[in-house]
Length: 414
Image (cartoon, rainbow, N blue to C red; front, top):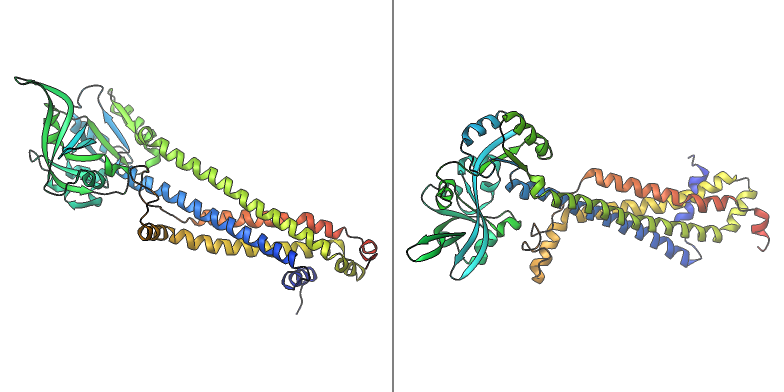
C-alpha cells in the first residue's frame, strides 16, 4: 500500500518509543497543556453564553423592552395610545402599569420593594411572569381585593406564604387629626413567583386598580409597557413609534435600565476568551520546545535520511507531521472534554452545592443564583480551528531547523 514518505516517517517518530524519556515527557505535557487549554476555553465561553441567555430570557423577560409615558403627569389616554402602538410592526403586545417604591413589613421585618400595578390579562402578553408563578396564581389579583404577588426571595426573607398579610408603606405622608402619618395599606399574599434572578428579592405585583388607589390617581396610568419581537431592535423601534404617534411622549427602553449588564457580559466574554487563548498559545510553544529537542535528538537519523536521498522539504514535512499529530490529539481530546463539561457543568455545580452546603452564586449578589451553560457549535469550531492553526504554525520553525541539518556535521562525532 502506498504511503507518503514524510507522513509515514513522521507517524513512526510519533509512536515509536524514545531512548530519551525526558523528550517523551515534554511531548505528553505539550499535549495535555493544549487539551486543558481547549477544554477550559470551551467551558468558559459556554458559561458566558449561558449568562447571556439567562439575561435575555429571565431578566429581560420580566423587564419591559420599552415604555411610553407622559412627562410628569399620568398617561390619561393610554387605551388609545396602546391601540396605535399595537399596530406598529414588530410590537407583540402592550400593557399599562403603575409603579411605586415603598417598604413591605411583616412582624418587624422590613424590606424595600418595587411595586408594579398591572392588568393580569394584558401582562401575560409582555412578560414571562405567569410562567414562573411558584405558588398561587396571577389571576388572583382582582380589583379592590388588595392581593399581592411577591418574589420568592422576598417572601422567604419576610417569612410569609400564601394567605399571609403584609403591610405596604409608601414614602408619602398623610395629614390627619392625629398628625402626620405615613401612608399604609394591608395586602394579602396571593402568589409567589421565582425567576432565579435578583428580581425575586425586590419586586412585587398588585392589581393596577389597587395601585391607582394607593397612589391616589383619579385616572390614567404611569405609562404603557411594550414587548417587541426583536429585543435588540427595541431602542430604534420605540423612537420610531414615538415619532409616528405625533405627540410629545417620553420613551425608554431596556438598554437604559439593564443595558450595562448586557454589555458587561459581552465584554467579559471577549476578554476572557482572549485571555484563555493565551493558554493555547503557551501550549503551542511547548510543541516548539518538544520539536526542537526531538530535532537535536534525531540529528543522526536526519543525516542518514539525507544521505539516502531525502530532500530538505521531506525532512521538514516529517517533523511538521510529528508536531501536528501532537496538536491534533491535544485539540481533539480537549474538545471532547470541554463539550462534556459544558453540557454537564450546571448539574455538576448544583451537586457540589448540595453535597457540601455551599453556594457559588447568591441571588442577593448576582442576577441569577446558579451557573448556566449554553454550548454553541460556532464557538467550538472556532476554538478547534484556532488551536489547530496555532499548532501547525508552531511546527514550522523546528521543522525548518531540521531541514537545514548538514549530514557531514551531524555524523562527524557518530
